Each structure stands twice: as C-alpha cells, then as structure tokens.
Image 1 (tube, rainbow, N blue to C red):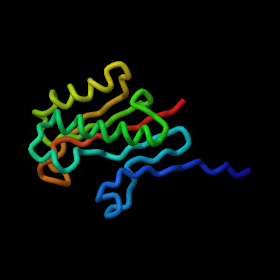
Image 2 (tube, helix red, strand yellow; image 1 turned 45 degrees about the vertical axis):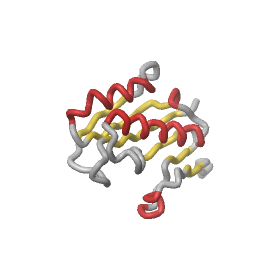
Image 3 (cartoon, one colour; image 1 turned 90 degrees about the vertical axis):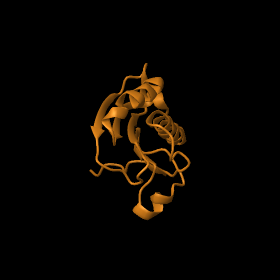
Image 4 (spheres, rainbow, N blue to C red; image 1 turned 180 degrees about the vertical axis):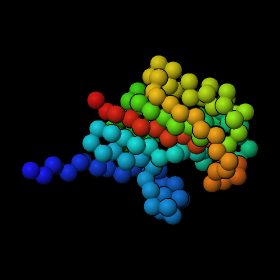
Length: 129
C-alpha cells in the first residue's frame, strides 16, 4: 500500500538568490521545518558578527512563523563562521534566542561565503508537535 504524500509547503523570503539557485528560505514537510542557511541581508556590510547573527536569526524566526512554527520548535541549528574569532559574538546572539530551547547545534568554520562581507550563516531545523 502506497504511503500518502507528505504535505509540503515552500516558504519564500523574497531573497534574490532563491530564484537564482532554485531554493526556498524554508520548507515545511509534514511537521518538519527546514530553514535554509541564512545570512544577514544587504545593509549589514559593515555590521559585526553579533549584529549579522541577530539579523539572520530574525529572518529564520520569520520563516518559522510562516511555516506555523517558532524558535521554541527548533531542535537543531548549524552555524557557519568565516572567522572563528567571531564565535563568542555569534554564540551570544544564538544564546539570546535559544537559551531555554537548547537545540542540538554545530559550529563550522568556513573559508568563504557568498558575499565577502558576510561573517555568519545559520540554518535551523524545527519539529512541530
């Protein structure tokens, strides 16, 4: 007997690269919400890593909300940093949202990002109960 198809909904943030790369800001599949790697938008070229992380988390929270979830539903995050020396500032931004939630999380240092001024990229996975 064939399984019923998963209820799937794509969420767009209107970002320019969604159409260029063919991706969605987030995808809700059943009770799972996958939020794509998210960076601070243009206008943050001179912002430090903390401010960029806060901006990325705000975009993630908006996508979660549009998917019917919230930061409280996040079970995993992955944080990509260009400069490991920014880890403390980005950790502070992450803690401000996820302190009580405590998702599983991974921090990865990368050598570059799409735009040369970007310091941090964050992805999230939520499970709606």
